Image (cartoon, rainbow, N blue to C red):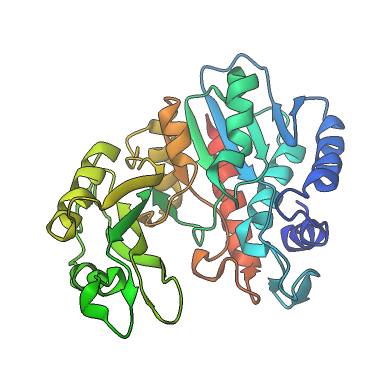
Length: 353
């Protein structure tokens, strides 16, 4: 087996910041086209390689090729069994595992589809999986999907939904010398912000996985001039909701939370929404992966593209090397042991069917 830490370093040293993945994807496509046991297709800056062996089950191994912008960490650095560098955790290490599986397992016990897609780290409308779904939905068909997002080599099941709500409160302009002649819209925010600050997280447990919801004010806009009472204040609120709630139920909850503080002329608008995804741990491939390797299982508190696959009817889970809590930081890193454990677990699953 290739030294996975060295392979990850090679991938880290090939830049692929969002919207600039082209050269990295060119290289990745060329590597995959050298593998005669795979059919390789490119859709934009997304590369899909798959076996066509007629096996009774098909497993998708899915990873995004882009990274966040460089933060003095563009070059890989290895010390002992640890590798630092941009994307080392999120998710060049996951890509290294998938690439090595593609290179080394030529006669898998199940059919495999390797999905390397672009622009995951930016706004949802740019996500490469949308492009593939629109142009070649057949390439994403399968019985189960594993996304190589960093999970410290454990299973992170499902994901929470994400919603952003814009709340606009109205006021009346006046001169600050005579504020009683107007109404300060920014001051009106105080009661609403107090309600958000006192929110107690709901923590539902689904299939043994406990999710923790959140409501956070993430942006405030308001003010006209230094001597004018503001007539509008706009608050952006981010809500993470558990998989036992539909987007409609999550929106209803947010509207109920804001309702006591809204009046005629105020506005409530959902500006961004990503549905949640249930754990899907009952799928036989996931059950075998977990039991055969004694993998820990936790709820995914963030949002990942497992939700997109669930919407396509493909059960999915997150499983990859690296620690998600240090992703996107200047000092993100990955350990050799984490890489090896993910590779060994997946290779044994693929070959045991």
